[in-house]
Image (cartoon, rainbow, N blue to C red; front, side, top):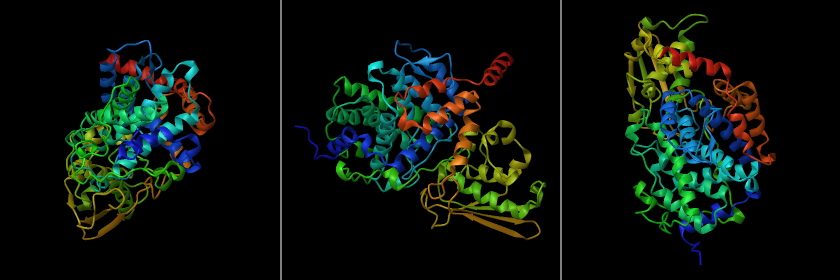
Length: 477
């Protein structure tokens, strides 16, 4: 008999037992926004150096079963490695969605499901509703696991959460999509737990995006092993020596009964980023943009030499406290860099992290004027933190602005217009207009699509200008 009374058993029962009838309009709406945003940031992520390195590595693998590499019309990889490189693309600019407790939920799940959708035989094709259900199961498992720890509610200090809960979410989503039975779902979670974990010391390096790629790949692999009969500990979520090994204050709880099930995504939306950097920097950017209006008049530039001091009141998050970042990845994890860029330009964008923008003398001058303060009430928690910026001018004037909730946070979500605008801006860097418009329509109507693998056909419609640009760059090199 299957032991459903354990924590692990209750999760396996939830993964196996939830059906499309459990999906609500709110969950479908929010998850489709997450899917569209993740596809967009993944597509623009294929233009990064870390993606190209991962792709070069993955080309050594070949198989008769293959899946699309986003934005690559002439290259396919085995599903595991398509999930891997596409997941890396999603997080390569730190542009993907963020939840509370802290993790990046979509990037660990979506690439695996897109890759799987193409690998199924004609007789086993899945609908858009099947896709949405599996995606939400993967998101749900991540959220439930994070609530087992108060430590997980705060910005992490030891390990990168997607490498832990993301791996489990990918295993859950893949298990659901593949139609595994309850015992196999339990084993998939146990196997995935042994794939989990990555130290936070690799934040702000090219290695950090691998955490998302590995989460998707390893979760999918765990589901495949479970399908083949590989077994793991039946109590993996119940034990301190199981999933509890990742948290000092582990307190697991069984999931609610299916007949009264409520999705976490129903209660709380995710944050969708407006620019590619660590979520904590978005408070600093919005505060800096607000205070800039007191100093800069229309059509004028920031009077850098007239500024004596810049004070930032932010939480004590050491890996986002980088006074003089020396690489684009460090800059994406710097309160100081993003605040100063916003002061200088009135905005932070993809272009802000180019070598040209980062090396500007006026930017370096601003960075040298910053003082960081950590007020005791400013908690390192994405639901509670704030940023207050004060600028003291040489003539003695002081201007102060505070951001409690940036635009894009779950308390202040992007409008549908701005959400779609972000996707179009990102996807258009890689795909043709037909590809961009096709993805928007597919995701918009996903619950009505009979074969979800059609999404991949649009992910291959590359922009010819992108090809010309890359060929020109290759010739120069």
